[in-house]
Image (cartoon, rainbow, N blue to C red):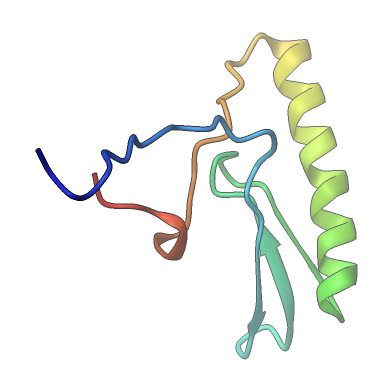
Length: 86
């Protein structure tokens, strides 16, 4: 019998989409994007402004997808720093 307890890996579904926010030297502004929603991004003069803008873009993206019958992907993107090894 092992001295170490068995650790079970549980997968918790994500409740919302991951948002990346970064400063773009080329554009001289902050950019926010949602990797799970193709082409869903926005920009702002500050990280909080970029976030507010991308949240509006997300709402618009989801609304148009619903209206046009486009599939809406489940939130699944996880940056490498949050990924675990099985």
